[in-house]
Length: 128
Image 1: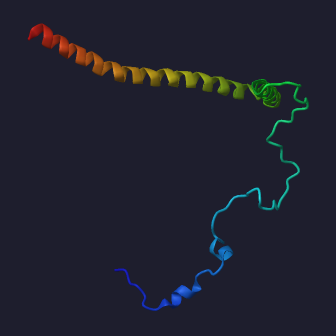
Image 2 (image 1 turned 60 degrees about the horizontal axis):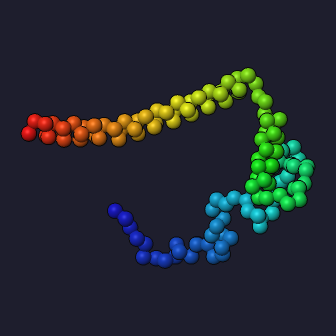
Image 3 (image 1 turned 30 degrees about the vertical axis):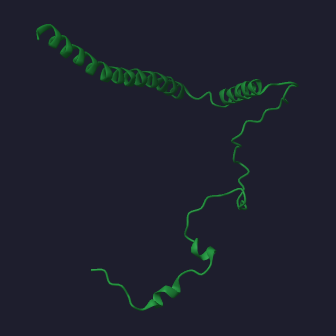
């Protein structure tokens, strides 16, 4: 049975400021917060591109140029071992097999009721 205290004294221990109220709230780093630790060995997650943008470049050309530069940078960084290359190729084939299986199941799911309905209609028309 739930007992409710008639004495409101336990309510006086509640936090009084916002800092106290959010002391145990999980928060992540934000742009406005100060960064307290710096690891000089950490690698940057962005790709540095040395060439500037050509004159008169359209947004589509810029996107293509940046994607190509990122692809070249990624290919240069991660050649990987033979095992990693095999796993990467295996993932491609597994993705293709999964897509074929899923589309096949979806197709058969739609095909079965259609064939069943047509066969019922055929039997009703021919034999009744």
